[in-house]
Image (cartoon, rainbow, N blue to C red; front, side, top):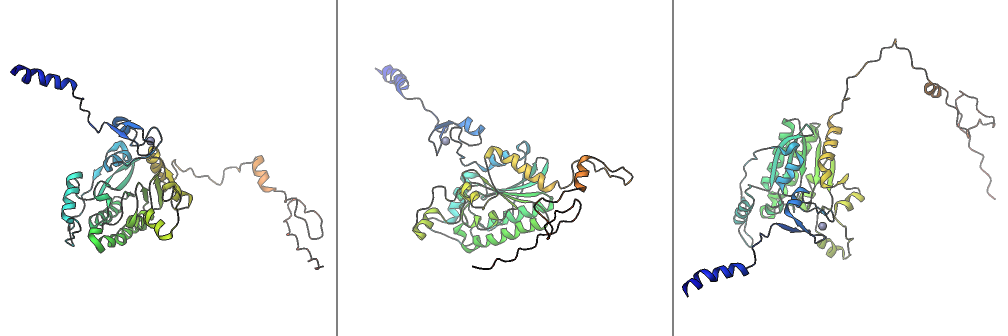
Length: 341
Ligand SMILES: [Zn+2]
């Protein structure tokens, strides 16, 4: 009986056991519910090929998508005290940091990188939503100030890509102070005459949307992104009114004049390159040819027309006679007021 239990039984068990399929091969679209193969999803930059819904993109994939040939150099960011208030809620803040670090292998929620976009120098500061919801604490604030300094030193445009739930409450007032500090940081970039562009991605909320994220020279929002300050439920409870379905989406903000354009992810890089070249290449693309005064003036039908513009037909002299060609038109005098009946 031994060979039956040791050999035949496992073989039979293998036959009937369902094959193990890794659970990360297929992703379900959060909007239309269709299943998407992971390779198709990566190829499509995490945009659903069935309904066009933009799912969240990891920060590294985002940087690869934006830079020329996906090549960039990461900047080292200044060290800051990790738990200045020794904060503890349900769990210690220190433990939360450890967990986030283990999950993302990053020191905090901001990555600053420099490289080229369409051949032009750019510094990109991108938020990592996977690190504590991309929340802004002292490290992120310090990182953004460093990014603006780097942009000035490199004579580069600064592009910030927020994906954040807002200020990091575990750092209390210190995280709120970063709203003012980052504002000063991006203001310095503007004073240096360099473009500051914001690409608002899903989600941009709280203290981040209330500071540097809404101060871009050009504000570009990614299609379908949630952008707002207070959450939808909080507002509904406060004003006791039902808000529209598309409230706080990129498209809603565009309709109400809060962002300059809503761009689909596939068009993000070409759009940014176009904006950068418009803002930075202010000189003519070709050599300038000077026209000497000895050149004979161009005579054509077009220049004749400019010299002899006929007066508009409805304007006449005060005595009612038509105006001769070439004579300066005289404004019609106001009719005498008809007496009231
Ligand atoms: Zn879909």
